[in-house]
Amino acid sequence: MHGKQNNVKSALGVMLMLVSLQAVPAGWQESPALGALFDSAGVTGTFVLYDADVGGLVGHNEPRARTRFVPASTFKIPNSLIGLSVGAVASVDVVLPYGGQPQPYPAWERDMGLRDAIAISNVPIYQALARRIGLERMQVWVSKLGFGNEDIGTTVDRFWLDGPLAISAVEQTRFLARLARGDLPVSGEIQASVRDIVLLDAGDDWRLYGKTGWENAPDPGVGWWVGWVERDDRVYAFALNMAMQEGTDPGVRTELGRACLEALGVL
Image 1 (tube, rainbow, N blue to C red):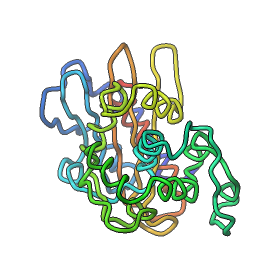
Image 2: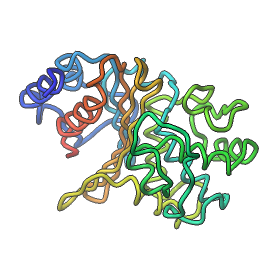
Image 3: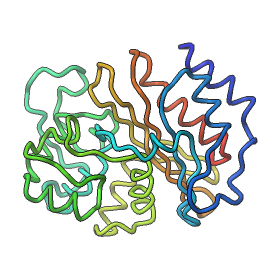
């Protein structure tokens, strides 16, 4: 296993249970335990946990947490919501064409529905969805959802990969908490469908939802892992972003993110 991932696990053993979510105050609480995890992993980045019930934020590196970055493939979540809402696809299982062009990953070179496409972060499928939605409807709905700076520019199938759309980690958590609780201005059925396709893992009393992203992949850029945990009838939305420098960094996003969730007692 890569050295960064070993360091994350080692630090987690020391830091686990040093932080409690019993009473996260409104506003921001900086966590030394999370900072130690990032330091041990050798990663520059941020992690935010938003307690949707009390409105409190706990995390690492508040200035970066409030800085907007291109959302990359985390936009597949709102893209799914919008595509379903405008009828660009009738369900998450309606097959979309990938276009027939060579792709950087062989798994992307086939037609598939959103359920399969989001699981492997298939960019051409979601670009096809965006083109079906169209620029005008996309702009209306990105603004309606209040996603980041709400600026999609003039290129309907690239704005979440290259900009100008940008969102902060804090904003990601607030958006995802609304989705988790069914509070977005989208039908309840559609929100439930999208929640279903981003479910990653579950235990006896918890469920983990999430989506990765990597701006400028496979070159250096900003990496994301965002989502939420449902536990004991509560919602904890989270967002991690980090500077991606090495080919093995994609695994660090989720490894470090889960370590943060465990250190905070959410997983």
